[in-house]
Length: 220
Image (cartoon, rainbow, N blue to C red; front, side, top):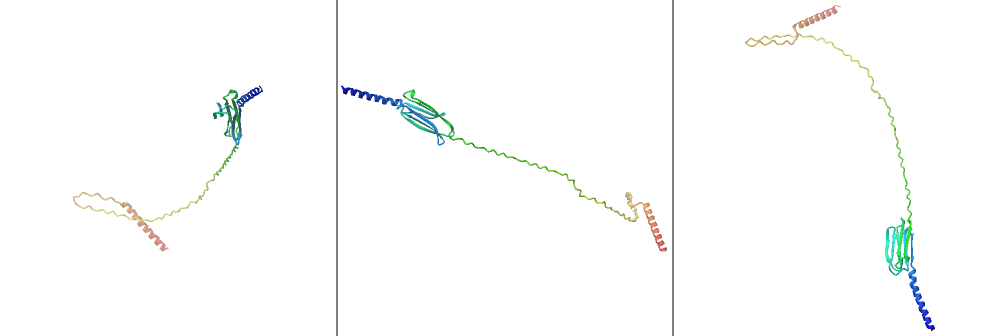
């Protein structure tokens, strides 16, 4: 009788332990995640343990960029490294196959790990100095270099030349006889006989006067 009771207790204990072992994995879903800056990079880490052996899914996004969308078994662990010069918003969505109460949703926001260097822009102001040179143009009167030259008197001596008028003798050539036509007399090109006579009288008078003067000087 005692042996039967001991056997029953042993079976009950074994069954309880088996049920307990089956119950612990089902209720021990352990999700964990974190996002941080590591060496000026944004790093997201996700770790899922003690989930059902199959049928679980995980979706991870960085903003609108999908990093992973895949099924997993009892455990899942992975990390993603993103650029550190911009901010990030990571979203994690886990759906468990053994009930919605084991689902996991988490959002991590990470500011830019690298602070933008404020480049001090130096503004160089160039001052342009315009020098205006006023050229004073003095009106210099033209120097008169032309000296007044006194007028030169030009004495013109008119030599009275006593020109003797030579009488011109006009010769009339008689026309040869014959039946020919009478030739007209040649035009006289010399002075007229009256002027020749007056000239001769003048010469005679001048000669007489000269003789008179000479004789008078001798007599004196």
